Length: 239
Length: 390
Image (cartoon, rainbow over all chains, first blue to last red):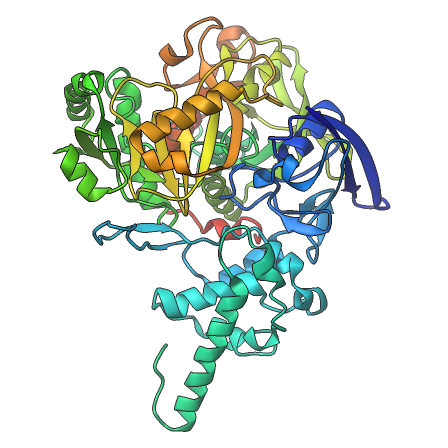
């Protein structure tokens, strides 16, 4: 068992923000989420935080730990600190905060609804497996870490953001589905895929192998080819 | 006999799959319904579920009732929650003599519960799933699937909200308000605004799962729900499209559920007094790794991604062997305990949440002498993405 210090950003509507300090005795093989849950269970029942699956599929627990976006449910304590170490825990950046560690995910899901990518799609067969109609959940677990890390989201509250742009790439290129007119207009508009500054912070923090930045770049290539084809009167290849 | 429920109000305690499905059913039948949940929805047992859409194969041999419930609900969920599940089927795999002796009993059970199934040899199974152990001698295909319990709750509650339900997460019930021997509402602590308030309703549904006893005790009622944790280990890497089950009686680590690029081995079983925070016994983790890799040897080569635990609500007396407690559900009308205005729904599993809700709300309607048929079998749910936007 290690004794570690959790410094947790606290906020309730109408109150000033503050940081509360908790000592926790915990097995270092357990996760940051376990430590937060332990603080709530044993020390402070006023603490609010979001969590559900505890294995990185629901995406609901994303937080900022020591300045970096993580999924605390799969981050072992021993991987981020040492005995007597300290963890600074805050809610996601760039989202309105409801209270404590709970961010308002409405703006995130509004963007995902514009694009409308189904969360389940065709799955490739495994090595040595014969192809069949397999399906699986898309890698994106809609945790919001990418939007939290994105400097453009920080400055443009209308920006579609990495997760929705990666989903748009999937809609067009992988599943071959088309996008709605609203989605196309948003994608090609002032707050769409041309806004990205290619810092790749989103891909760096994504816990689920989505590589949104790579997909935004691929989407730009595709859009550029489309524009050139249109200019040359070759007709649209997609839609 | 009133036929309209539109003047009746209900409070549902507990935002897991049961509470979410009950709230959805009540809203469709015209109740003014408010759900209160002390954490985020699905932050209790439901969230940490194994993610398996049961075909019923796991239960059909010893618990035919649970087996039949599962296959019926499996079919319904595919219809009402489309595009939200991995539907690649499941395999029961037999590795040793004990498994091979169980296999014909499994087939019998599937026939009796009308669970679609197909037998095959070990080679045929490995042809479908090359990563299966070379020890697999035979297998039975069943229509298992994979879902996400948080997104299921979001789907039920997005639909309920669109039908006028109020969903109040971060609202902890501190007291049941009683007038004599009747429950007339709840006192809640809003943990966002740090305010306390009273909510009144004609009926309170206690859907607090592993915490059902804690809530029922507020009205002096004893409910036989035993918090029964189990460990799950999510491993890096996906080695099958199908869910893999051990072809034998329920035991620790007898199921490996694939999901995205991971494999979840589960589960184990023991009882606790306090389900709020549970220590993970290392020997359970080791057993799961061992049992899972018997069916899929590749699991020996990779690392766990997430190890987690939560208490299931099993109905039964403490001291009874957990594996023997039925996984079916029960609705307790506490009028039989001398307390009006409250029912408890407990036991069960997420796969059958909709059916649990149907039976519970039927019971509530009988109690209030109203006629309002259930329509949840055919009502396609709204996209889970609208839960946070409505």
